[in-house]
Amino acid sequence: MVATYPIFGRQVGSHILALATLGSMGLLGAVSLGGSKKSKTEGPPINATNSEEENFIKEFIKNAEKEEQKTKH
Image (tube, rainbow, N blue to C red):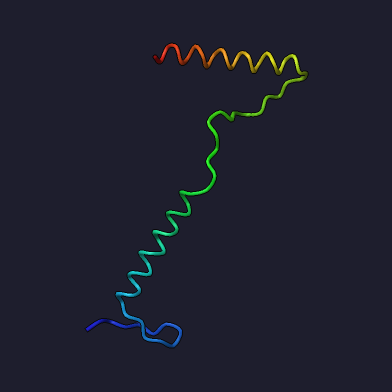
């Protein structure tokens, strides 16, 4: 009544193969969506020549984000 296939010398039903396929696809999907999430606050590295320039860039970005939040609300 059920089609069987010989796998590693044993007879395995087609319904078992279907469940194994669906389970493995679900597992692969869950694993691929998991993992560590990159923080949104992380941006590209700042390639400043000195600390004064780096502080200026950080302050500029901070002020730009504040202005962006003000216009959104």
